[in-house]
Amino acid sequence: MRCACGVLGIVLSAAAVAQVTRTSEYLERMDSDGDGRVSLAEYQAWMSYAFDGMDRNGDGVLTSDELPGGKGRPITRAEHLAKLAATFNRQDTNRDGYLDARELSAPPQR
Image 1: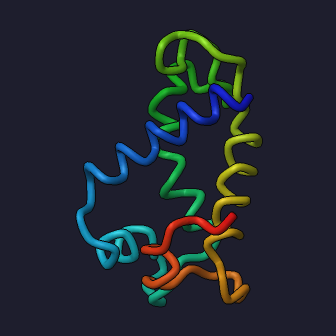
Image 2 (image 1 turned 135 degrees about the horizontal axis):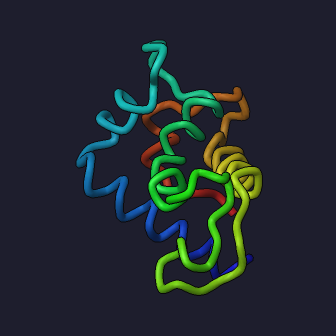
C-alpha cells in the first residue's frame, strides 16, 4: 500500500500544481459551495480526479495495470478517500472541520 499510495500522492500533487498556481485558486476550485472554506467532502471530491482518471474500467479499484509504472498493490477508492481524510485532518490545524486558505497553503502536519 505504501508504494502505490505514495505514487498516487505524487500524481495527485503534480496534477494539482499543474492546474492552479496560487492558494486562492485551490480554495476557489475546491470550495464548491462558495462559503470560503473547504470541507472534507469538497477536498476529497477535488483530490479524487487523479484516482478517477486512472481507474480506466471504473470499478473503484486501481489495479497494478492502472497505477503509474504498472506495479503496486491494488488501491480501493475507500482506501484512497481514507488517505485523503487523514491528510485533510492533519491540514486542519484549528480542528474546525474545514480548511481555509492558510491551512491549504501550509505543509501537512505530521
